[in-house]
Length: 78
Image 1: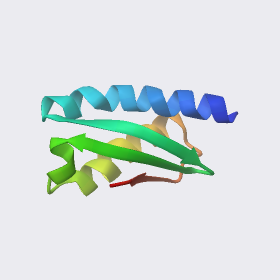
Image 2: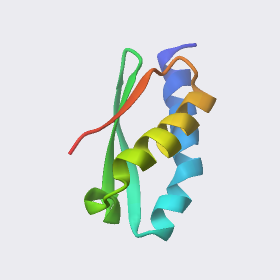
Image 3: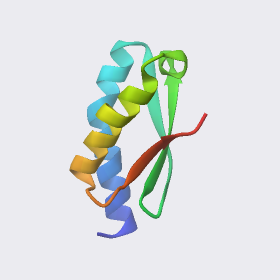
Image 4: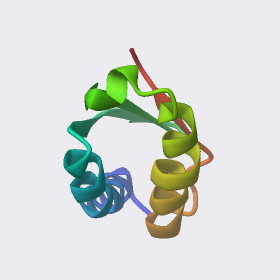
């Protein structure tokens, strides 16, 4: 899979997740994809949410891996 295809698939995954985050007053922004690590930034209500690490691993990372299985980790950059 090319870097462009990977980015496209990660964007599709984020588009699937975004409505759930927005319903809670948050959002997510893709910052970069380096090797097999995706760097994102949680925004809005998500930044101070006590469960944002759980959301990141169980929701965001799992969905991204569904679209782009080569991704190993998703990191929230504050």
